[in-house]
Image 1 (cartoon, rainbow, N blue to C red):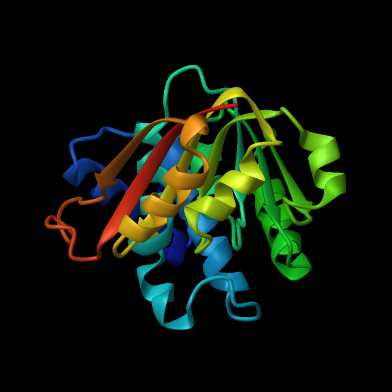
Image 2 (cartoon, rainbow, N blue to C red):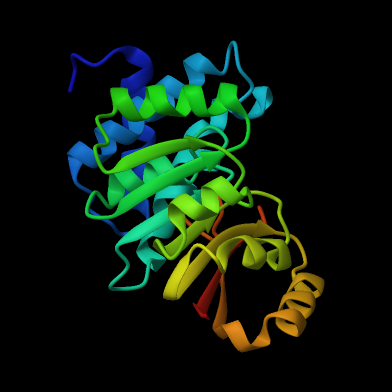
Length: 230
């Protein structure tokens, strides 16, 4: 472990400490991969805006850890997920690291970002993961991936009603949506439940609080979990 570069060692300590603080004893190989990913993003971020520049210092807590942490909410029997609007690889790459048993596709419409994410996937040797530079609503994407996924993840700003429109042609008969959200979700839920009531079997919202720095969820982050049927 001491042979790691200083930046990776710092990230490794940070991500491992977050897991320990919250009562988990994570696999060290997973933690090393997440630290490597954080280092790759931080270096690439100097040339390409993958995360907010002022946020680079907190890349573990605000990006890598929170993306990996939500894997504990993944329902049983999921086999393949789509990360809608992956940006710099969040939350898709940390999920793929923590759950190598799942197949995954990370999609984004911005070519420079998907080029970076492909590079990250290659360097992290995530053989279960592919990257697409497309829009999820494009007919070509739908044709390629229709009825393919039983899990959808995102931490983008798209409203739930738009996400459901994207998801329905791409999902198997049953699927789940896990969306990291912030703020008041009342309006979003009212709209999506009005239009897609017959497709939403169950909805749950989890407060994403964690030790030591967000015990009362002052960051206001929530995980929306929708159980969906066609």
